[in-house]
Length: 279
Length: 276
Image (cartoon, rainbow over all chains, first blue to last red; front, side):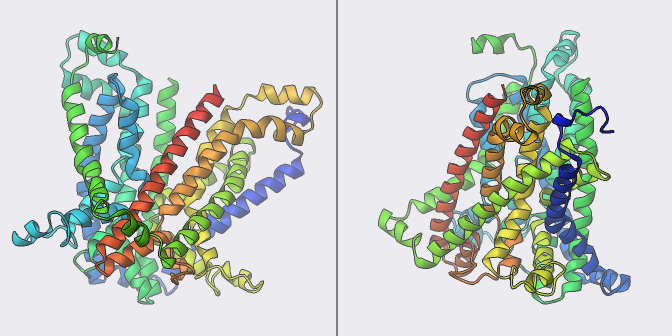
């Protein structure tokens, strides 16, 4: 293997070996061992205890709420992501750079602040607080607040994946379709959509992982009402703080499985997108 | 010129997609963020300064920014090493390791928090060995740094990795032909080319660490003045219904993240120019 490698173009074998060992050791300390510990702790007392922990009433309610939140937040951001990337990638207009920066903004805001801003609007002391209270509408400490905060933190995921992808593809294919008499929607569904399919999958899967896993922002708006406004990550926190470690890690292992599946699909999607860009 | 270009564009749908983009952006992001700014405007300047500079708040800045700086520094060094090893060397399981580097992006922060707290606690898998050397990680400021290293790691690796992939092998050959040792080549030829991306990754990891909440609170111990991070202090104020206090501190955090965003944008422009 190293026969055709000139000695001066890579490090000596011993150095290579040492550097690889240090890098893997570092990753083991900060990634691999903590990941393995999630599953080890979850199954520490056996499979039946694990399964019982997952069937607990509050945990089931938390799973349902998390699924509901993701089911609403992800499609909202998908529609936005496709609309924004069409406008930004296929047309030129002044202020494009600023618009992209604004779309990325939620990534640079602390999750705690992402929750706080909705409390300041919809909370009891907030702008709309008195109005909402007199009409008996609950947003903060209820599902709508959790959904809003989740939409905020996952806002950029799909758009920021699609914009560079669509920009790199240009608009020749779409223009050809239009000239040949296709309608705008036909052009989008038959030409653009197949081209950005893997980009959409990539964005959706990351958006979904964050939507189901968000902790800080949701923690601020949820109110931690057991069985009602607890999402899965909040349920993990409650169980952990009650020293119910096995149950906490059992619920956490669901999220860790989700993370591993996300990484697997992400790796495939990344590979497909790169192949598409090459061809 | 620009208008003419748009005029020649035969594609439809600019109006509706742009309109929807701006509407949705305003409703979800801009309007709620401006709520914070307006709420902060209720303060007079001396009131504001007093609210954001009590000893407890100042201590939390020190803990948060200090730990984030240390974590970003560790990530800059080891992230560069990991990126280098992943691009230049081959070893069994390389692709698998490469995919797992993104774990902190995909693993919910609460899960990261409880597992790091467990592994690094006095009787945990790693903490046990550190404890016997007198090093306490969990429930100390060091624990905060560990959590921030975890969440910041992919930022450095993923900004440096593509730059190493694109490095022109010819310049390394040239350096070698001119008699440079491998270390000299790395230090004087390769490293300067990687510097902008390392700094960008450092800044991204730092910014992420400063705002982080979920993975930290489980391992931090959360002692006021010692191991209490600023985001937690905001939540504490909220739980005491001190909305004004929470708003003031959040405003400081928001402004600092805008400054970091600006720095990151400048760094990215620099690295792009460097790449060309």
